[in-house]
Image (cartoon, rainbow over all chains, first blue to last red; front, side, top):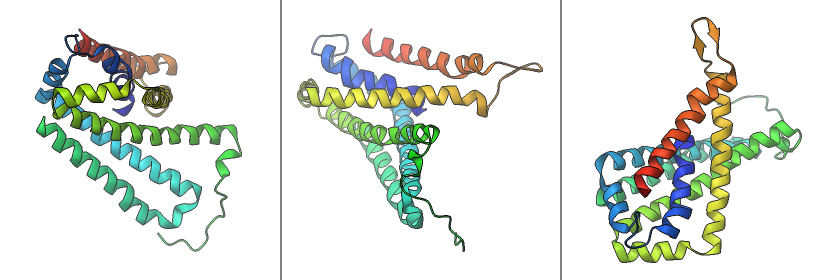
Length: 98
Length: 128
């Protein structure tokens, strides 16, 4: 899911929206807000963000274990997956609040 | 897990072979993806705060540092996606009847094709 969605999302938020997403354009605040407020888009965005966060947390944990922190695997689990869980919660609250 | 014998491993083991280095490079893309996901949370928050907050935020993105960070994140995510789609047919081969499809063809059918189509649909949906 990260592989499918993230490149196009980076392209949008990093380049297309800031440079052509002004007032009155096709990607104005009203349109983007309306689009993201649609329940299906919210659901997909939440899934992409939550899965990607856990995917990243898992890989960062394994990078750290691979470079010598294998002893701290348990602590790293709590930190990495805990951070991903918090991030997913924040994403949910922001999406619900839209 | 409590193993009696632990094989010694230097922290820089992945610099020993080109394959190891590429593996670690691919794993390291997750750091940039994590950074981008945090940015995405901020983006969602600004979108929820109303037109003024969102416009100010977009304005702040039109500067060299955020553009550079987005370029790095884009490169990282493209590397991650492309290596993943090349990998999937090796994990999950596609068969047509009894014949195994060539990995390249299966990668297009399972990965690159859907990826391009989905990206196109999202771009069209947002920008039309």
